[in-house]
Length: 139
Image (cartoon, rainbow, N blue to C red; front, side, top):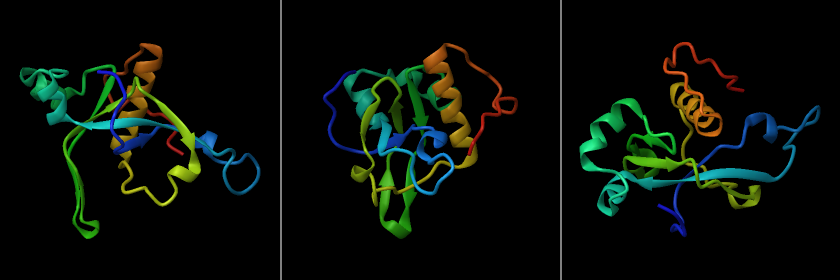
């Protein structure tokens, strides 16, 4: 699947070390990189993902170009995102001002670890199968 995509949720993939100013307070630069997040049901409907592949996708997150994201519901904010895939192969770069005040969630440690694992696999072709031994810097 390729663009253009409708405006919607995304995951920030800019490394933390690129965000923080080196030796001073604040941000190092205003550029952010995100990848779009598309509902899994829409991808199945369009034929991008086969329905027969869903159980393996949910269990193993085994597709190099995508990251599986379970459904998210935040009752307090009256916000939800259906089960989705992040499109690692369609990064979007924009100014921080577009994002300010629009964050609705943050990945838990294991989710952030999985994102780092998927990005390493996507950009280098190397995959660490065991998340318990994959220990990327998370700061």
